[in-house]
Length: 393
Image 1 (cartoon, rainbow, N blue to C red):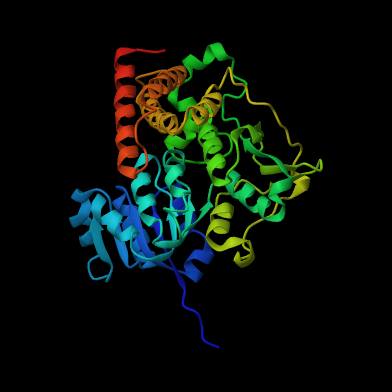
Image 2 (cartoon, helix red, strand yellow):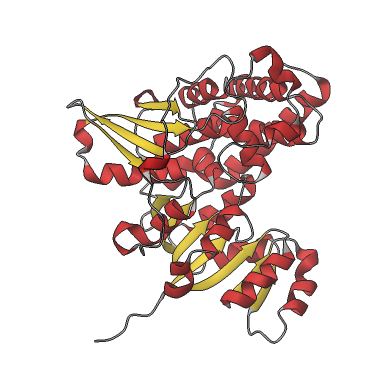
């Protein structure tokens, strides 16, 4: 029997939370060849990862760190590259799998560059789907690459839908931890500190996504993602607050039954599933010990306390330009909150202002990536000016 060669993978964002979790999975080391490790600016960790995994390419986005990376990896045989154009060049090279794990809008262009150049796009970059879903899922544009979600909620739904007839599907249910302010009175949210908002009760994530979870912006982004990923009207997507983060997704059927996917809250599980699939997945993760679970609780999201979820539905109804606005405004608002320039409650005010502004842009052409990025930049400028002038709706 001829032994098959290892599949190769390129990892966009290898030094971030998803990237680090991915490289800690034994199956990745044992069963894949790393084509490229791509990082933003964490040169020390990229050096460490490159020496451990020996990729063909090590790429750092910050060009000024090229010489240092080249020095660190001298004699390793690894090809060193830097800068945006190098990132796009390397990710455009044919691979079996691309893991898109760069956080924020910085991941949009590289993610789109992988389309039709890889068999599978394991996607954790929400922003790519939210702003460019009209391109990613257009079969006239994407005629080769299968898109598999990495987020625990979407990965759960993705697997549950494999086992049902879509014509019998009634609704899908995304779960949300609710973040640290689930029971905080509305009038106190304006006084929430950055430090408090970064204390997520369940997951250990980067700053942006942790704040997104605290505001439920993250769930709004996931609602938009789900409508694209599963080609379903957002009115058939329900969000359920589930603080224990044990049930990651559910599908309700017309026959009155509901299927749920449960696992311990460990991001390595959906990452491994997205990369390898359920059949080839190595049995290396712990299952739930149900004796340890005292209770599973569920709550309806409070749209008054967390208006980001309703704004996401409004954005879907308003059209693609509003989805770009939702994403762009959230990035600017959260960054300014982290810098302590606005309050927690002001985040929603910025987003609302930008959604209203987006209605004046509904005739903008967003049929290509260049125009979408340009629109995003315009809305970010508007959001920044809104904050500077305190020009809330």
